[in-house]
Image (cartoon, rainbow, N blue to C red):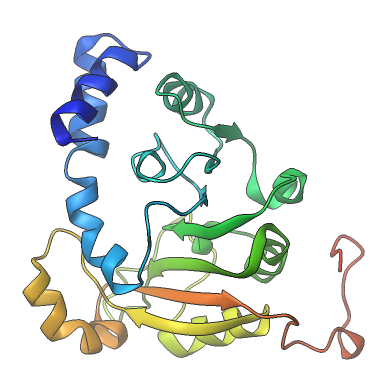
Length: 229
C-alpha cells in the first residue's frame, strides 16, 4: 500500500484514539519502508517472502510482507494494536516458545534483538527448524564500541563482526553478506562507507542461509537438558 493508504489504515484500525494512532504511525510506520529499502535491495529481500519477524513491535516491517508472515512480540498492548491492523502477531517469548510455531518461513527477520537474549546460540539453532530449505535469516545488532555505545542494562552480549559471524556459522548457517547500514542515512553514504561501517560503525547486519547441518559437533559438547537437538 502507498504511504497515504498505510497512514489511513493505521489511523482507522489502531487500538488507540486518533492522537495515539497518529503517534504510533509517525514514530514507527512512517518512513519505515524507505529507511529500509537499502537493506531490502542489498540482500535481495522480496516482499513476496513469507517471513517470521521476531521482536516485530507494532508490525511496521511485517506489514510489507506476504500473507502467511508472522510476528512475535511480548507486549500485549502492542500485539493487540498490530492484530487490529490485520497482522498475524503472536504474544510469546521467543526463547520459551519459538518451536511452538508449527510452520516454515522463507526469511527470519531478527533486528535489534539478539543481544537481549539469554541464549543466542540456542535461539539461532532453533530458528533453523522454522526455515524452509535454503531459507535465510537476517540479524542486526549494535557493534561493540570503544566508546561503550553498545552497552545497555538490557544487553547481555556484545559482538564484533568476526564474533557474530562465528556464532551464526556455528549454529548452522552460511554467511551470504554483511552490511554496516545506518538507518536514516542516504543510500550514497552507506554505499561508500559500508565496508568500514561493518567494522567501526554503530551496528551490523548479517544475512545467512540455513545449511543442512550445523557446524558444531554436539557429540563433543556438554549440552544442558533444556537444549533440544
